[in-house]
Length: 217
Image (cartoon, rainbow, N blue to C red; front, top):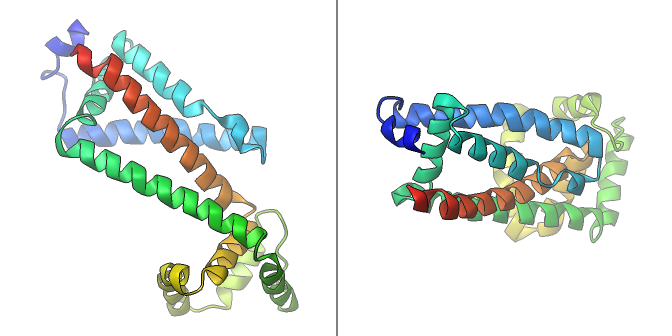
């Protein structure tokens, strides 16, 4: 950690630029890994547990060993900032918000596939009568067919009205999500399942990093 301390100022960029560099680099690593794991484990999303922990753990270890150069220093600084001042509160708020959104979305899609299955089947049948076949795989043709039948203004109004459906008619909201998920080959459910798991993993990583990194600086 001596190298990191002595060169903190000489090798640091603007805080926002550092944040962008670290964030974009992690996205470039994690997104392909996540897509690759989806292809390997298919619907068994739980089989990809631990990917975030492994990647972050490896980067933290190599950064502390000064094996990642300037990027390692930036990564460590970003972790330290996550435990200080206003950024700490923002991180906690975002964690709770996305975790809540993820759990609620998973619950809603599952309800649409089970509790409100009859209504969902009626919606799918109506699409079938219009010549739109919605199978279990991502179907670009079906998405294009549905999109072409709805004007841009109507699409915007539908998106804006979705949050109100949660309160006014959760049954319809749930079915809309379930149908959308099926239309996209299950990627909506998969995305939020992964999001919930990864948020939990990142939270654990932040706690561990605070114990083994921040207290030693």
